[in-house]
Length: 186
Image (cartoon, rainbow, N blue to C red; front, side):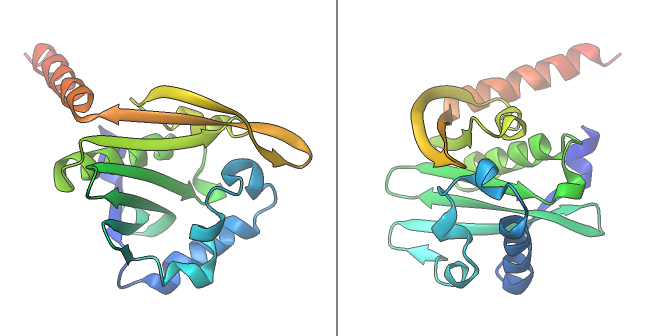
């Protein structure tokens, strides 16, 4: 897919300031609470970013989302729970890059990294019902449940939608994609 050639993930370990600046820009943006709620509050606070690289059996992989060789368009992270073989993924794209399906491509890259590189058996994510764009970025993931009224944002109850993808489901999706590609080749 063309989008996957344009979007890449770069480890943020040597670019913490840039990672923090992008998160801060996302947090300072009007309406950020309706996109992120308070779920990412402790993770996205600039001061906390430098402390959360590793915690026992949990490893935090902080990533910059890059478009081509030019711009960094957002941030992402994978919280790897080594003991349970599970990963939690999250991302935020800068406003000027939203609405171009780059979030879905980034989600696929995060899934691939979680399963292929980190050997996860399960990947989880969540989205707020107040953020329809985030819901569509859960590309290929399965809605596992809804936490009704999880957050109060601007005086309204907002649901948190929980998504998951198991390794066997991801592998099946990969085989299906390969099969469709092979069938379409002359």
